[in-house]
Image (tube, rainbow, N blue to C red):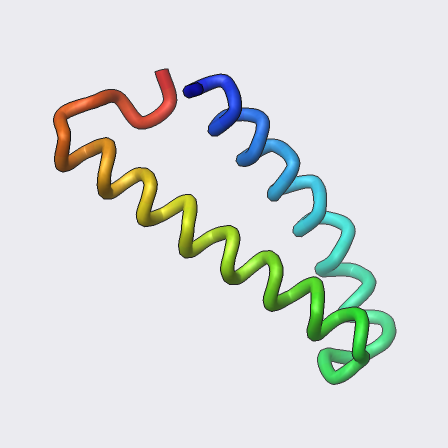
Length: 63
């Protein structure tokens, strides 16, 4: 299960790295930019909650 967390983090960073320049070029209010931004935000919140849950239970976050 931890490998999926690592894969999720890698994919999140890849999408963010592609989304940031796109948003800079087309503007923050572009429809696609807004949708991808929400997806990134929600995923980041869920990953943060997962990390807090793992820390609270005394498990390692990434390994």
